[in-house]
Image 1 (cartoon, rainbow, N blue to C red):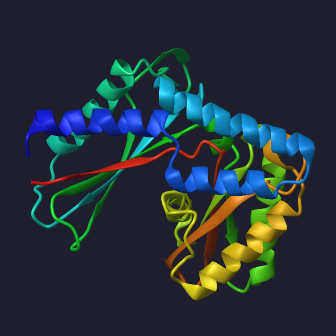
Image 2: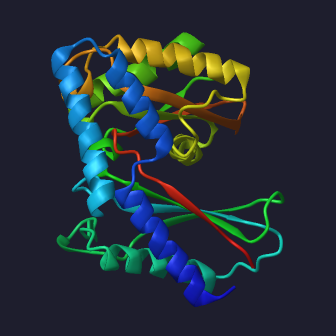
Length: 277
């Protein structure tokens, strides 16, 4: 796989994710604006939509928090994976941030100090259904990332208690997480995997139903409950606290029931590129 072409492709998806709001997110924001009756909330949604329009037109960051880049790599069986490939992917993202004058937002976790560009997080999966590589970047702002929650439920816990936990997590996030939110929920696996599933859920098309009918019904139920909180866009009230709830699940141990919640602000940014080997 050509190293230079790969880095150029990665630079491009950094730009796409940072400057252009995802079409599915934009669609649900417009729908929320059309439905909203609260005048202050409607005005806030108009600001959000105008901001996205200007960012795309002027090649500006959608949000001043340019996020910590989280990279999801899916590799086909025709690809040889080694540390060099992962380093190339991370380097391409770093260059993309530099070339597009995006704020460096990464620091040492304890010493803090001056921010820098290195430190993108890379998750690697293998898929028999693709050829080459599929690389997705999710620049995760920390206004919403800081509102993440994990709870290790007893395996006998009722579904209602899980619903309460998800809704309470959003309630605690409040206006500080920059609503309207997209709420990712991960159920199952281990503690770390539940939170990873929750983040992966944010990559799903939020304007499409979950193919799992049970999860689709649960997503709709949770969205209704969350919007009844009336936090609203930027905390100004109204019916648009969240645009969508997306759930992913995985098998877990008989003695456990991990549930992770990862919230995205209204600037849910991601972009994907397919690279042939």
